[in-house]
Image 1 (cartoon, helix red, strand yellow):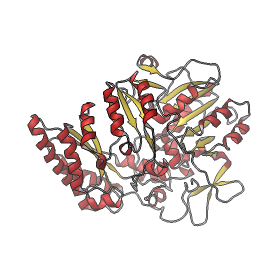
Image 2: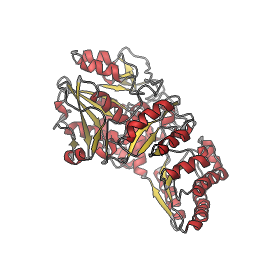
Image 3: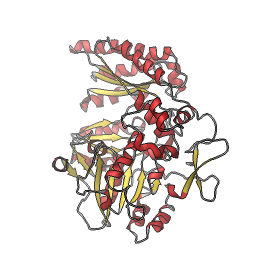
Length: 515
């Protein structure tokens, strides 16, 4: 891995070794996934560009740690900084730290374990006891104070004292899990007792230091792109979306800053990846795309909202070489879409896809969920019906070109997330989810030109437990299979699992200290 990675990488930030404090910047998944994550890259870049630190990347390949920049054990480092973006990656933490020889060491002899990332901002409790300090919210306001503390000569407790003063800081070891009146969950409480709050850090302006990579690699998921964050936060109001709930108000990268950063990116890649939770809502999206095309480059948005598609945007996508566009109707019926905050009718959806197909985008990928709150069998039938109608459009617009495109339908079980409108809704039963996924597969399977991909029910149950749990989950992380878990297995591993997944209708929840 190290030799292969080095031969395909382009370093943007300096990476000479300064002899400073050694920091392992860890992503709890493999190199290909980690190097595609712009949050991880932002943290890496900050440490690389500070001469007080000797920062090295570390990844987890499922069985062992990989050190592309050198190293053999996490125990060699003064601090280990982890970026946890996705809840399922939490199950890798015990194995990762054990392999890195950290768990065998006493707290006073091991490196300081610090962490951040969207998954922890949503709910840190399911793995909080693993870490010495967790930082909630945006990384950029946190990093200067964090690095000043790490570079100081303070002892371990002194470092934690200093970190506790930083915006968004949560020091789990200074709180204990207690059951409060009316709640049977373990809730974090300070030694003095009573509730407390932590406010996630918030970056007010994207323009001063836009999120961009420290190093790009053809060995990553999006190795042909130069990723650049152009929006953060989302105001679309989807009731199920944790990212929209925790990433703060919408902020956009200004055109002047975009042009400067795009010029840097075009030096490394022809295509700039436009990253953000609200890319479609950027007021300068078409202007940004046109600027890149005029410079001989291309653009690739991380997501597009159906209702934001225009003939001008469709033409720009085709000019940039896009042959597939991904859209997320989420539900098969208008009523259910409206109930979850996706207010677009079937007619509007088909009109917008007509714009793409007419412009010359041959292929579409659609994302749906099953098991949504209030879902009926007719809503699942609606997925099949909507795809059938779209297939007629694909054939119609493809006929003059001599070839119809394809529709890829991705259907996943709905997982309730903390800090959303559905945080108290139970996950649908395994039987219900399996039956509804099967119904979509059988309804669309015979349809030519349509590919169906369905998510794992067991994967959804693992995601739900890690998203919605309390500190008791941290004790069994090493017993949870990374690929997913059944309710039967969960009940044996963690008796409280049934309550976590189905019984959150009353009482205080573990993440309510985040305000």
